[in-house]
Length: 161
Image 1 (cartoon, rainbow, N blue to C red):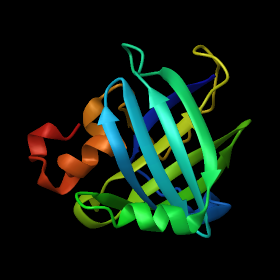
Image 2: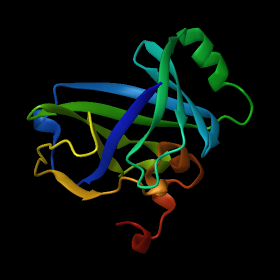
Image 3: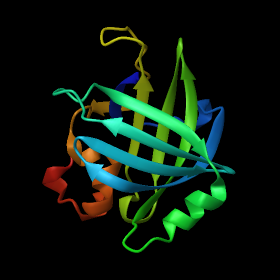
Image 4: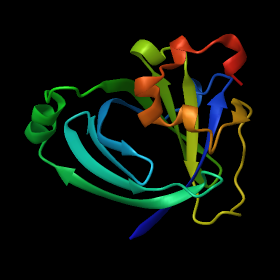
């Protein structure tokens, strides 16, 4: 079992000049239960299935397994009845000893830009670039699986940090 330790932040500044790559992502969920989330992600010409366990109370870590799957299988699953998907462009932005992943959401989550950083331990130090805004780690509203059922564009202004 692998443990993912990740922190998430809203993006409030321009990160694009520092990005080294970008990828179009379409993802959808076969399960969004808190105990077990099962996600399928299509990224460019690759596909992956990811199984994630329950998040820790603070949302900082959880068990995660990820495997490559055939793109044709992922595309077939995307057409299953009741499947909702979300689209985003992911930018990779090196800062110090880490690479931030910045997601610019599309569709019903347009105008949401979120950055995440994976850490080796809970207390690992990292450089916080000036384009990073408030931390949203552990705020379930910002989980990708939740953005399918409660899209960002439908939030009231007071609900947004």
